Image (cartoon, rainbow, N blue to C red):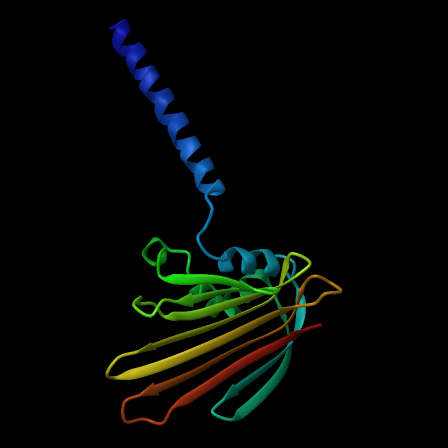
Length: 185
């Protein structure tokens, strides 16, 4: 009986410590590509309550509003950037990575399948100053292309302006073009 308790206690201690160490290892794990989701999370955490002049254009009709964004609003606004994150196990060997001057560029390999075609990160003083991406997807019924840009202010080290543009074409219908851009005040 005493041996069973001792073995059970040892098993519980082993289980507790093995869970903690695997979580710690996960945090220290090096990602294969630029951590776009983590970068967006970090930057929007600096913008809670920020005022934005937002321009929305749908098929040429433009609307401009001044608004204030919470963190939840920012996450919704930047959803396309989260979708463009390529750090998933299924994409681990799908992109080439090159550096040219101040740019880090991830491009989808010709034989690989993925919606994100390219991510380009520009650095200024070893910190990202802009991020752009291009995504596309198509099948026999529709095609869609999405491009996004995220620019940092060098004086405030916060988001300065951004834009996301999507063009969708559904079989037998006219293309729909949507562009959303914002300037942080």
